[in-house]
Amino acid sequence: MSLLLLNGSVIMNNDEIKIHLNDFDGPLELLLHLIKQSKMDIYDINIKDITSQYVNLLNKMKKLNIDIAGEFFVMAANLMKIKSQMLLAEETEQETEEDPREDLVAQLIEYKKYKRAALVLKQKERERNHLHSRGIYINRNENSIEEDEFQISLLKNAWEKLIRRKAITQDVPVGKINEWNYEIPNQMELIENKLKDSLKHEIKFCDLLKSNAPLEELVTDFLALLTLIKQKRVWIMQVKIDDDIIIKGV
Image (cartoon, rainbow, N blue to C red; front, top):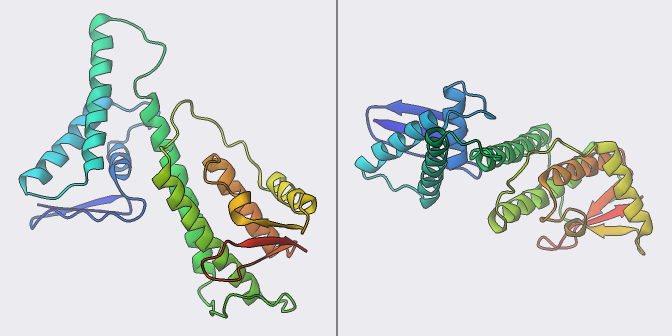
């Protein structure tokens, strides 16, 4: 049997098992697929069934001597822990204030937000399929679509580095799930005010979008910055390839 996990889909054949993990693939991706395949509500996961499916899949892979990343087993242990907590609550007929699934649901929702942000960036990439590399410096006198595309390209690269750093250095926030509390117009105004308040009317990208900020804020700030560039209300520059991007007011 073969299993291919690619962009959230599982494909099986009769040869061998393979798992393809891109930047966003992993145990949460697999878990989301199983939840979707089972037509479960992500806010009301049947933890008994989903744990059984997940563990059975890992066991099949182990039997075929497949090298599985440790994070998949960590998730399996977490699922079994949640399952045992829920079974214990049922047997003792005790009602707990907190649902044992709450942290897991929060992780899945946060992960879906990361994926949504990635899809936005991929769409921007498709829109720039005619982009030609012109070097690092930007001539502001050229009022062209190509100039905007080049600035967006710089911004996209900086964003991807930021998200990788956030994903690697920080645990996924858990707890209560909040609504999306940020609006692009508000963040656009906030960015422009920060530029006006700075001595040189400029801000470093890393100072504007900090990796310890909530993901909702980061995504909204990024989209607000893209809008400001398109409207030519700000522009960005990068002196050297490894330097931080500088955002300047017009």
